[in-house]
Image (cartoon, rainbow, N blue to C red; front, side, top):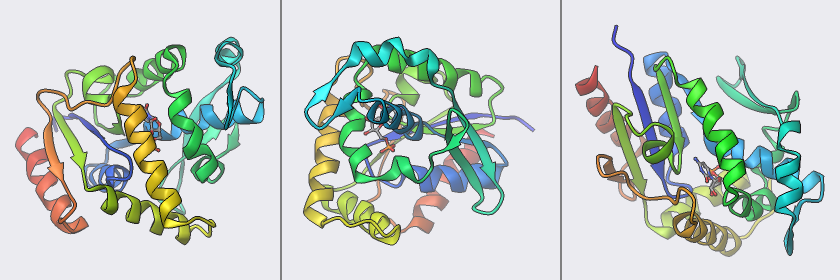
Length: 227
Ligand code: C5P
């Protein structure tokens, strides 16, 4: 059967990863959450004092990029691949609000992007992949068979992220989350290298008023047209 490449880009907390996981599972494809890779590099930078709320040592981090190994390992129990940084499972550590506050600063560094994009292209070279992020349809796989661009209202996005964090037992306020989602979207769309933009041939989906099921069915129709 024909294998395709599916690129899903869009703003923070628009449900990209939930959708991507569902599609990958249905098709038996690999799913790659590229945000997890930027988060893992950020976590490495935090632990090694290259970044904090009010300082960034980009050169120090760049010099140490060769000491960062990122891998995904599938966890049967949870049903998806978890992020490993230098052989340590960091899946929980990279989802905190502290990492969310710093990740867009790290994602602006071109050398970081080059390293991660190369690894992402390797992972997708045999197709049969669903990848989500900010630059997948524009930079990582400009020839992807299907490109989706996800949007939602700021309140919808913040509410989703807030519910997710609370469910994970984190102590956050709705305002804090709303501010973070808006700040990240601003930095991601305004950075010089690979800003978040809709690829010309991407299909835009505003899911503010779509249930997960409706969205999944809509997207599976688009997928089936490509198969
Ligand atoms: O997808 P997630 O919200 O976990 O991504 C975290 C951050 O990583 C984004 O806000 C963005 O700054 C960065 N990112 C990126 N390019 C990607 C994926 C994520 O710059 N392809």
